[in-house]
Image (cartoon, rainbow over all chains, first blue to last red):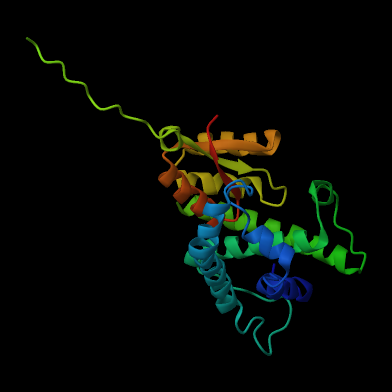
Length: 150
Length: 93
């Protein structure tokens, strides 16, 4: 079983949907380490830790973008195949998490949204929810591979 | 006559003497299996212990995943943020 055109498009969106310019997404990905109770440490955190965190997030997405470069292959037809090296799975798991958090923040998804089924309503929110679910299934699968490999 | 030597009074800085807690807060988007794996990876916890903390986060909304010296706690919080968990540093009561 290969990858359909629709799912291949969702795969290509993994890194593109991480909107680091969106203030709410930035706030979630770089959340407060003291819930605002220690302004002095928070200032140090912003200066010294956040640049490292941004780099970690960026590096994960770069690995995924590298794996997706040239996908799907030109002149190939459905179903498509994507090969991911085992050593890249951690970066995939991380990037998928960034994507899920970003989409959930932008669209305001809560626990009850995730518990419901996926509807292909055609609107951007329904598509985003489909992405969150699909990326979650991929994450789960990759985590099982990592567990088996360790 | 015996000489009595008085030792200088030592004061303990309460802020450094009390242990600090690393607290992880619930986030419905993070997968439960992902959170468990992060706890295993960051703290070296067994799968059982990591799973216990994950379930505590899920059901109680938060879990104290580690307690100890502030410097070490800060490093753990940083690692947890690197894995996109909602983690905070709190002084024990």
